[in-house]
Length: 140
Image (cartoon, rainbow, N blue to C red; front, side, top):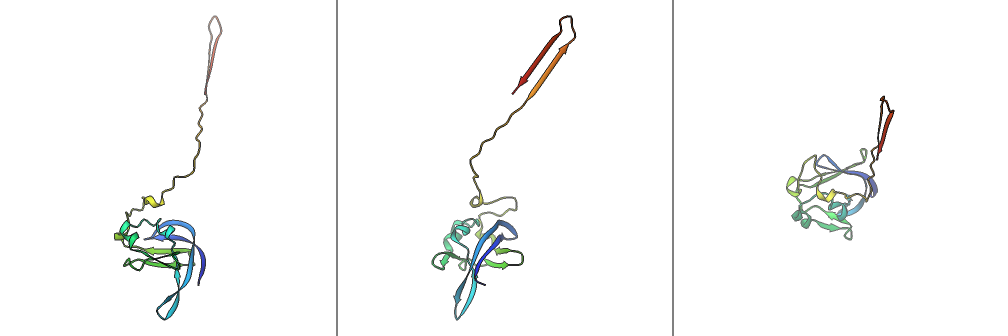
């Protein structure tokens, strides 16, 4: 099933990246050819691996795909019916793991913006005195 597929990246049952293009390439393994998932180095850097784990990974397919085989226990599987790429990575290789925390590699500074706020307050006071006195204020 070589080709490009739009999949969500799930790492240890945590949805990390929604809808990204993941290529599958044919790769020779011994005497047989298999279809293998290609994780780009750019996508690998967003996973939140420790520096040691990052340095342990290799590359294949002219440097376009990361070889996770040096990291024992890392498993990749695709679920086409759910449009998911599931990765199982031992905690030993991850910077930190918490369902309510994203590693710095996933942080996004966003885009420059402008915040404009206003407050309108109107006060009307009318006193019934000998001299009809009316005070009005508007604050912005």
